[in-house]
Amino acid sequence: MYTLNIPYSVGISGVGSCVPEKSLTNDDLSKIVDTSDEWIRTRTGIRERRIADENMATSDLCTEAVKKAIKDANVSPKDVDLIVVATVTPDMAFPSTACIVQKNIGADNASAFDISVGCSGFLYGLAVGANFIAAGAYDTVVVVGAEILSRILDWEDRNTCVLFGDGAGACVLQRCEENKGILSYELGADGSNGHFLTQPAGGSRMPASLETVNKRLHYVHMDGREVFKFAVRSMEDASLKALEKANLDLEDVDYLIPHQANIRIIKSASKRLKIEENKVYVNLDKYGNVSSASIPIALDEALHKGLIKKDDIVLLVAFGAGLTWASVVLKWIK
Image (cartoon, rainbow, N blue to C red; front, side, top):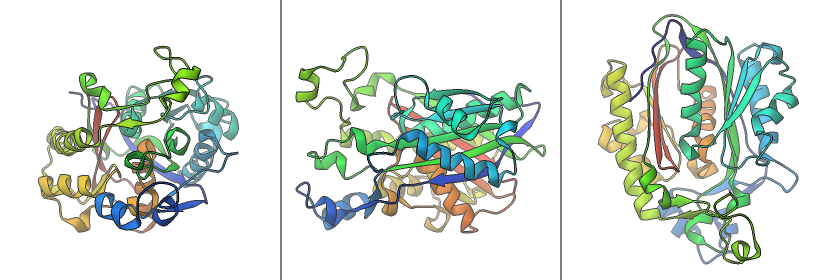
C-alpha cells in the first residue's frame, strides 16, 4: 500500500530494551489457573514471561529502553527531534506516554505522541519516524514499543493470561548512506475483524462502571483461533509485499525477526516464507507476547548476540489488534 519515497535514506543507529526483573514461569501460573507447563509450552512455546511490579508504569520501561538506545546511537537527549511510543497500555489516557518519556530523558527539543496499533505498533512507528526524517522535517527520531499487559489480563482466563508479558524496546532513527537502512515497508488494517482481539471497556463507547468491572470487560478478550489464522496469512502477505517493494526475494533475507506471539504462528509463517529456522530469531520462550515491544526487544538481543551484521537484509513482520499488520525491510547500517 505504501512505500518509502525518500530524498534521504533512513536507518536504525541505536537500539535498547528493558524488561522487568520479575519472572512468572508456567509452573507459577499453574498455581493461579487450571494449566500446566506442558500445556502452555506445547501450544505456545512460552516458558516464562516478565511481570512489572506494582510501582512500575509503561513510561518507566520506555525511559530505560530509550536511554540505552540513544547511548548506543551516541546521541544526546537534546538531539532528539521526535519521540513516538507505540503502546496499548499507556500510563494514562493523557498526557501521552511519549510526553512523559520526553520529560524523563530531558529531550526538551522533541515533539512526542503515542500510537495505538497493538502488536504492529513498533513497525508502524518505524514507518512514521522514517518518513519524518525522509521528508527533511527531523534528523533524529526515537521509536519505542512498550507494554505492561499484565495490568489488563484476566488472570482467571487461561487462554489469554498465559500468553502475555511486560517490557519495552526502543530504536533511534537517523539519516544513513544511500540505499541502506529502511528499504521498504508494508502497513495494513482490517477493522471489520477488529472484534477478534479487544479490550472492550474503558473508552467512550463503554466507560468504566460497576457493570463493566463485574463483567470483566476491562481485560483482553481474544478469539484465539481466528487471530491465529489471520496472523499466519497476514505475516506472509506483508513480508512478500515489502520485499517486492525493495526489489528483493526471500532468498535475499539474512534474518527474520517476527512478532513473538506463538511458536506455532512463527513456524507456520517461516515455513510458508521458506525461511530456514536458523535465520529466524525467537525469544518468546523467555518473554511471551510483549505486543509492540516484542520485535524491538528481539532485535536488541539478536544484535548483541552478533547475529545481525552490517549490510545484512533484515525482515521485521508483525500482526496485531485492529486487526493490523506491518512489515519492514532493512539493510543494516552498523
